Length: 108
Length: 117
Image: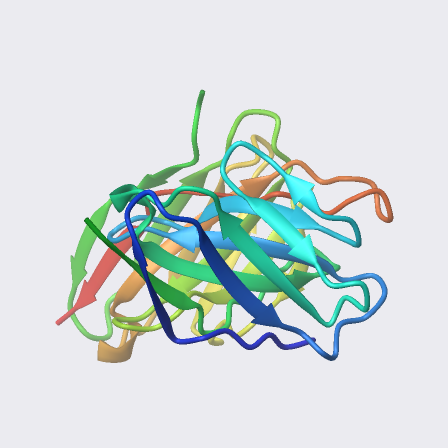
């Protein structure tokens, strides 16, 4: 399975944008880039996914590099409720392998 | 909207006992996944089922088995429990998308916290 690399932790101020990076240099042509997050004491929650083009939904935006070797999850205005571990996962067969995500801390 | 239901939410067992965890997927979802998350660890994929057939297998111990029933609910059976089996067990469900069209979005349940004493 292709692997992803994310920073262990990041901090953000409330109501400011957050850019969470993910490197996936060994991505294959059929791998989709998925982002999930896990809030404290909860199960993982789907955030967004994409293949080649940038994607937007009500939760976030996903910016995918032209060579697809990296991507960035963008939270446009962080809130305290966005504090979570964010996982970037490559998925082409629907069985996701979670790596070590980024723990996002949001400061008031 | 209906979510994934897992039962029980908490379970305490002794070493060498057996445990059965249940998962009820979102209605109309045909695929179920099981994950194990140890303390301070990231979720690890165990096994998945699509239309009642095993779809993929991850790091599931031989002591564990699982199946998906005709109503699409799934059960994870764990035998000869060890202290190291203490973890959160998550079930997720999805509606399988045609290959090449997209990938599934998995919806996770709240988890079952298993404590082995």
